[in-house]
Image (cartoon, rainbow, N blue to C red):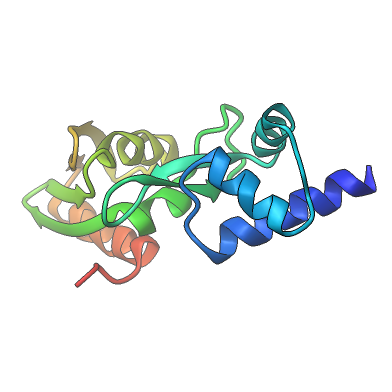
Length: 155
């Protein structure tokens, strides 16, 4: 069991330190650190550690460790939004949230899972999420909260 904990600690260290795009790349990085694992062992570790592939700036996807308590294993908004967020704007009761290509659907699902009382619902395309709020003041509150979760927009 100690080997498994140590191996998963190494996986966490690698994923936290750099973008890793594939299991094969991760296996090579593990091998460089003294861990020669099979693809099935690595897959099992990633599943147990709640590691998901998410789109990232510049195209492609990378592994990220999800920390939410979602029973279905989906990454929470706090994990997904920062690397996918590009811009946000609102008018009336509506917010338009822009993401990297392929980022809108997972963001929409994560936002729906938050069950914020100010949000009536979301509609997600490929790189845009339309968020319908209950009022203009609710829209302003949601924008502020989303900007806080996302951090600064990329330049």
